[in-house]
Image (cartoon, rainbow, N blue to C red; front, top):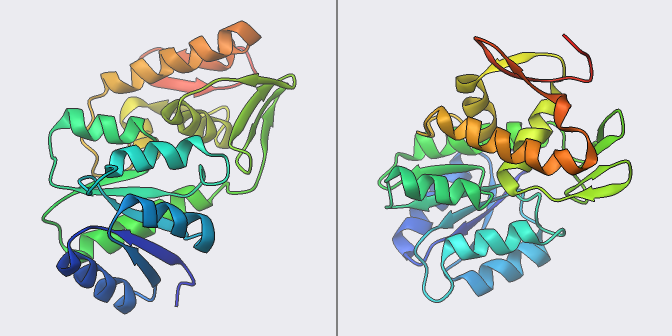
Length: 230
């Protein structure tokens, strides 16, 4: 048994049943909801280790629920994988920018789903609960907050994940493709230029606190996070 509890959120009973069988065979425990309100209550009360969240739900959509969960400090660290029939790149970017950790398009195989779940749990669990700090810049996964010399730094969900990865892997240069794989997740089809956009946003957030120099461009390679001057 993995010991991980998964919340399935989908308004189609057949899909919930299919997923629950796959989760049980893979050693996961699971709970389920068919709407956003019930799902939100379960996240608060049951503290699942990961949420499988359908985009199209009655009433409040899955994407809106994802934004709500990521805005709340109490639920911001809960990993989310979107399940949806929407396959266009803009929809994928919208989902990832809302703070979701991965994106899988219907129809999908249960084997792929379990693989994605395991990958997200490995990725999000690596630094869970461990504060990261570098020369006065601090990222606290428990409160989901970034501070610079004890002053709050306002960063978006994607910039937060990017900074968390950088601060967990300091002084190493990463290509755009590597950052896409590590921060956005494997099998997510996002263009390399998307990395540049979020790097600029991260630097802009750090600039008022004079920490933008920590995010360094490595010519011909990509980017690096370091307090050293190369």
